[in-house]
Length: 258
Image 1 (cartoon, rainbow, N blue to C red):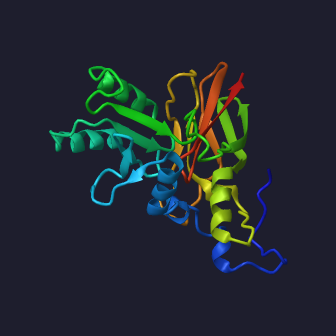
Image 2: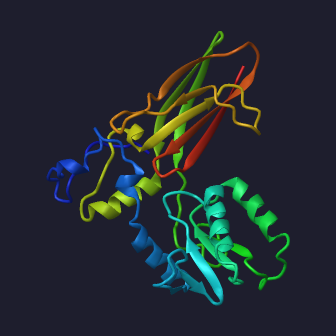
């Protein structure tokens, strides 16, 4: 999809200046759903009974404690270690825990499996369960997620590879902007405004991503370059380009070169 210019109103009138994203990068501070509002919506969707007195857990689901992981990042090992510390500080707490999240780091599943290994049965003390709001078979309709997409061209000339990101679109970011804009229809005139960073592996083996080049803008006003040149050795190889948007979603594009 082509990403067109500056926002305009329904009647064709120019939009207010703050809806133009040609200068300032769109970042999670601009886009994140207010955490308290998101917690309320998620609790209502799942059927969580809110707790107004617990300083850490957000409520209960049946007899289990519920913790809503902030939706501006996936469930990480840091989140899990925080839950562990909280439970250790409550030695008399024997209830299970339900974590509600939007996405999970791959390492999170292994951590939870190890934690639950000695906690057999659904009623085991402090057993941890996860509700992932995009994929959970029962509660996974909270978000209708469309993945981000990218169009990338990779060309080789001798021992120099050129990588050009020709287009990128994140439906999640567009949807968030639409929610904020109301009747106005926001448009982004430069796809780079949606991108947090670009990482390139010049010899990807399909398993481990080894960063040969990284483009991580230092300031909010800076954009990624979008076009890169990398020196490579002779022989065929696979070039992998990882694009991370401002909401943390990753797109991995691979191209084989000879």
